[in-house]
Length: 424
Image (cartoon, rainbow, N blue to C red; front, side):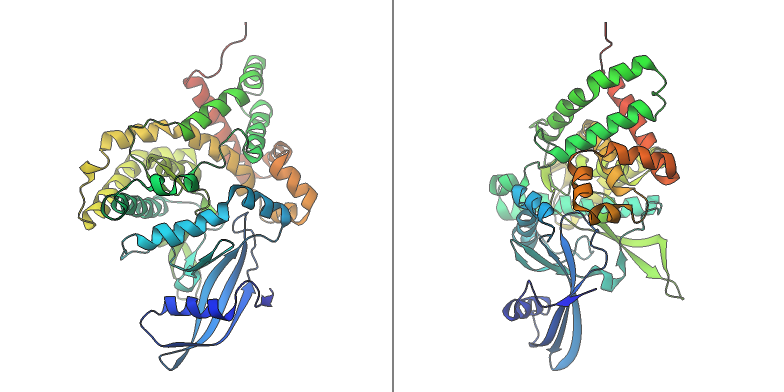
């Protein structure tokens, strides 16, 4: 852990403090940035805790904030600057969330300062919000809290367009909200697809069927690439769109927990969920966020058991959120259209799940080992994730269970939708 005063200056510190205490007289007495020990909370940024010692209405207080900066790893910085993701997230917080209606329930951290290279946010850990441990189980309680927060985001998006902007969000911020990961030019995505193919032909129930192997080898990458890019970028103009998070996975959600008497956290009993990290945010139908939640956070059996109830629950929460804003859901999104978009996005999120798992479900410490070696990390991100996937399928039960069932489900989906053709 290191302490510093880089990235911010005294004037900026005072602005942050004033915004966090808008009706009070404040004076900064001292401040420092403390580097977070876990620098892989996400993959594209460096993280700090900002500690401000201050007089607030003549009373000495210590306040903490979460700070996110452009990564010092040069290669990651190049990736970010190339697609402008960090600037994108700054604009979402400062220009979009800033004018959304206030909510009585926490669904995302408050933002106190932005630049194109830095974000200063509410430190939710001070309120007992935590990211779920890697191997922890997401129950129906967890899932529904995420869906509730997404419904708040989506309802606020509808409100923003109708009552404040009086224009679609993408008419103002369209370039900012374009797709950056599921594209023909994104090497990270295509390396992920190749890893899926490697797993499909060597470690699944299809691996002992020569005809299936030939079909997968001949069709998988090209057919899947074309189809998911079409799904992600060219959905029907008839679908209503909102600001979507579009990157729902374990590390982008913080749950609030009540601590036990001994101070330990009961990860099975969350009370609310906050969405974080909007670098991949899109303007698209809300069904995309809902499907990402159900697919990426749950094993197949759990998802299927609660699927209908969770779909209905999201729509109920969206209705309630719109009611609180004096809006009627029928003016924005019918239940029938919502169901149609959920079905439409299933293939996309099934692919994204398989692409994510080799990065999100590795055993503890493994991603850190990769990150520590620049050449190996570059190979993992931009050249080959199949080798790592096979290694941990063979040696780690948690990874094996998630990866194999997800790849098998994806291959079955592609056959159900007749993407593959029998060779003659």
